Length: 171
Image (tube, rainbow, N blue to C red; front, side, top):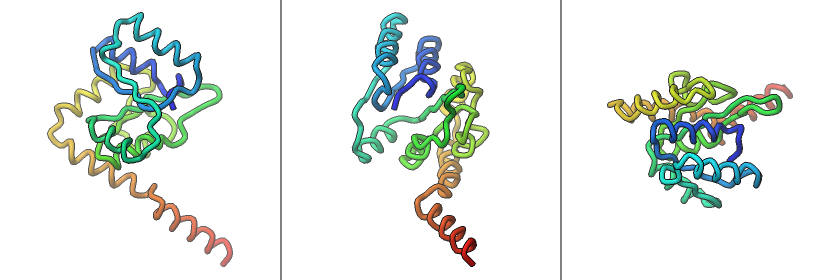
């Protein structure tokens, strides 16, 4: 889902300031933000830099979208009523072979690694991470490290932990 707290405006600002091409995948959480989003594109003349792919309900199509991109960015913000709890999009991205970066809030650093995070709301840091990854000769090594990090979040790994906890609690 696409909504303000996910840091969407940061990515639009990034595109505006650095002329970066960005793809948004998903549906808007509400119509008001959707209108704001598309008005922003027109106002700042960045429509050619932004692609929006909606209604992706097929995991194969989603995997293809991830693998057609070199980086997935989750620039979430903390608000009074919300923080990024897990960031499933990051796990999906890494599983599809795309390196992920994200803001240093919630559970995001546990998924992408501390060195692949940036200060929430700081578009210059996001740009620096993107450039680092674009020129980094060990891109595959970074992806391998991230894939190892997310193994502990697989269904099998979680099942084993839960089963062990249940067993220990009744023993």
